[in-house]
Structures are given as structure tokens and as C-alpha cells.
Length: 167
Picture 1: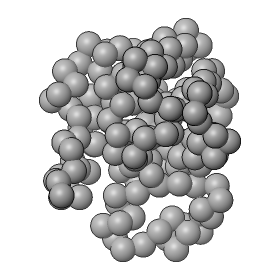
Picture 2: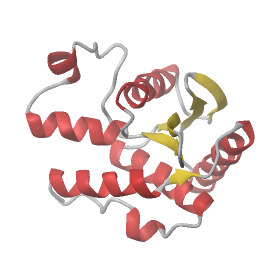
Picture 3: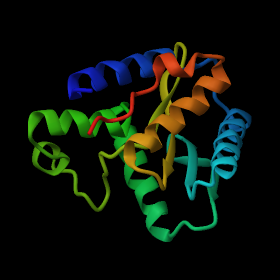
């Protein structure tokens, strides 16, 4: 898929995957759903669900390293700053031929515009937090989060997910 098609699909995901509410229980449910998917599939992931910088769920599965935790922190910083998924932000930077540092002065030590962090938006309130995973290739990290949100919200995952990259 071309970058513009991916960006359109991610914008659709961000519009469609809004929560009716967000609290510690919802964060726990989402985090445990992601953890269950990861364990069932043998993924080595770090999972983080937060509300405005407050960690509500965190899990580091066997085989992860402190580097995965750093990726989670840096990707969730992108969502907190732009209220867009970290993957969409990275694709937008790529399409414009720039980086977060060049365009916004945001250092790579604190911001990673790579897939895996998704804004948690509540109907009528906007973005209130993020859900982030690290451990898979960035597109797969993104799709796993979308899959878990679709399952929680009763949405059709195949109609929203990003297609596999070609080539």
C-alpha cells in the first residue's frame, strides 16, 4: 500500500476505534487482552496502557529487554504530543521527507515515530491516553493494537487493519 493509502486507513482506525469511557478497568482489560494475544502467539512484547502520562497497565513478557521499554516510552510520547498514532506520524514524516527533529525539534532520544502506539480517545472527550506495544516490526505492532481495540469494541478487524506490506 502507498503511504497515502496507509494514512487514510489509519485515520479511519482512529475515528472508528473510540472508547465509550476510559478508566483503570478499561486499561486493564485492554492490556490483558493484548498480553493474552501476545502469549498465545509467542510474541515477545512490552505492553503499556496509560492515561495522560499515568501508567495504568504495564507488562514485559519474557524475551524483551529494557530497550523495548524505551521504545514504548518514546512512541507513547509521540501520541501524547500529536494525538495521532505513532505509525501515522512516522508515515507523515516520511511522506514529507523530514523527521520529528528537523520539523519540530523533537529529539530521537525522547520521540519515536514508529508503529505501535495508538491514541485512546473517548467519545465526546478526545484523546485521553495511549496504548503501546514494542517487540514486533512496527507495522505488526500497530496492527496488534488495532486488533485488540477492535475485539474490545466489537469492530470488524479485517476491515480496519493495515494490509501486509508488499515486497
